Length: 345
Ligand code: XIL
Image (cartoon, rainbow, N blue to C red; front, side, top):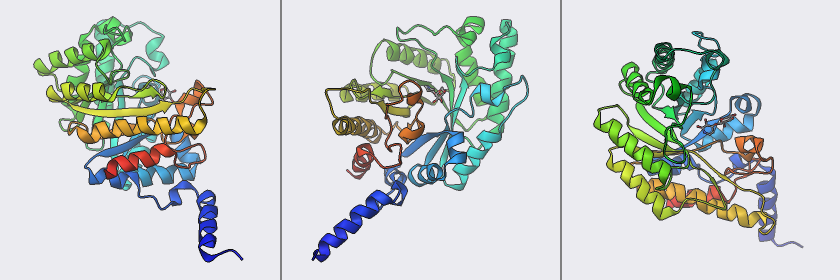
């Protein structure tokens, strides 16, 4: 006869494997984050949201910040010149509002995700300024009061600290950055305005240049409220925690919020290490971003770039990558528990 206690364990194990993750007894990350006055967010894939009910359920259960992975980029919103399509963005804004989530806008001015009408013609400086102005005006006005913070300019600086060549820089010049922030502020005086970039989590040539640029812009009175560190990192080569803390603090001293905006921790297949080992290491890296956020009052939120390995953009590059905190079957990975543990400390 099987003892009673063992029955309970067996039943527990069966339930554990049979039930999707969202039905687990674990406290929701968003509640743990809120108890520390922090946001925990996820970028949302519109197709997944529409076709996969488990996706929607976990999203709203676990996160208190939502940002569109692609639905507010220029090629989506203004596919035809002067014709704006806010259907997907509005659907996400409504979902966020219904579920008490902050809606983060991503992104107004970027060198990628540009519509063909823009890239396949040449424009004069004045024409391009007008195009940028009209885009910012229409999008920011549309979401006024509904978006709490905007990534105004995304990825403007190269690894070596120089300005990235792109249509905006090449035609308008470096002042496109300043203009973008000023116009965003003009059409929503209350929304928080961020500069967002990758590989800038620790002091290096790139983050040094961003630091000097933002310092200079702040000194000129350009309305910038925060910096977003994307944090697309690899488990084999994560940012050093002390360096990261130092970096957050120097940007905070400029009077900026310092958020993590697109966290994922790529696992490149490593024949010398088993999967569990890599998942544990990944969990530690996730935990370090959340520790850095909790330890710095300048960090308002940490946003993941997705939440399940099922739909991560990283699988476009490597189908075996698994950079998020739920696996492709929606089971919480060790990173989920480590983040919860960090909030509970
Ligand atoms: C990525 C999306 O995740 C993909 O679906 C899309 O094909 C390309 O863009 N930095 C950013 C994000 O700021 O907007 C990018 O998102 C990932 C890198």
